[in-house]
Length: 291
Image 1 (cartoon, rainbow, N blue to C red):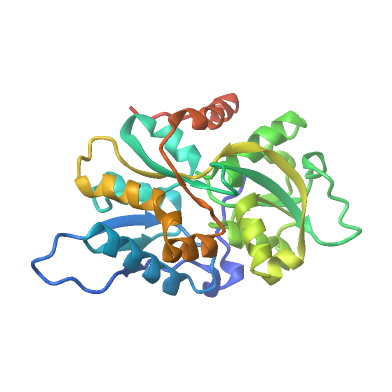
Image 2: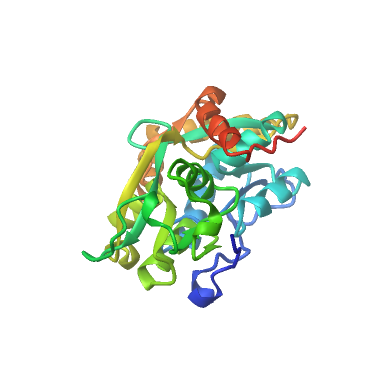
C-alpha cells in the first residue's frame, strides 16, 4: 500500500494546524481546557468551533481551546505529551491505547452511540463498483491509518473477499473523510473508505463531492468516535466537560450546536461498545495495544 498525501487536492482541503479559543481570559482566570480534534465537516469550521468553545467555556466556568490537527496520530502525540487535556479521536486508536485512556463521552447519532463505515464510488451508472470484490486493480482512498471506518474496516473487508493491498492498483491516505469524498468525486480515486456519518452529513449540507459519489456498501454498526482524556488525569474540569457535553440537549444553544454537527447528544462513557472494534483490529493483526 502506497501512502501519499493528497497534494493534488490543493492546500484548500487540508486542515490548518489551528487553535480556536473562547474570548481571551484575564490573567486571574484558570488555565484553559485544551481539546484536540481532527477535521470538523463544516464549511464554517473556525466559526463553529469558536461558538462551541464559547458555549462550553460559559457553562464550565473556564476558557476552552480547540486544537486542530490533520491526523489522529498528531492529536494522540499532543495528548500523551500533556499538550492537550482531552481529545475527540476514533474508536480504533481508543482500543489501541485503552489502558492509557479514559472515556469522557460518546456522541449520539439519531439517539444511538453508533455509526457505519461506507465504501463509496463515483456516481456513474457505468462505474462497475458494487462492493469490495470489485476493487482489484483500482485506486482506493483511505482516510487515516488510525481510522476505523477509513482504514481498519477496509482491511477486514478486503480480506473477506480474498484481496490484499497489493491487489489494488494504488492506495493513499487522504487525511480526512471529507478529503476521501473529494478524491473519489474528482477521479483521483475510484473508491473510498469513509465514515458514514461524515458522508451523510455532507449530503445534508449539499456538498458537491457527495452529489458526485455514491454509497456502494455499508458496514455493521460500530461505536462512535469518543471524547477521551488520559487515564490518570484527575483535572476536575474533565468531569465538567463530560457533564456539559451530556447536557447539551437541555438548552436551545446546545441543541443548535448539536444540529450543526448532525448529532443528537453525547452519551455516558461505556467501554463495552468498543469491543467490536477491538475484535476487528485483532482479526486483521492490527491491534497494536499500548502498555
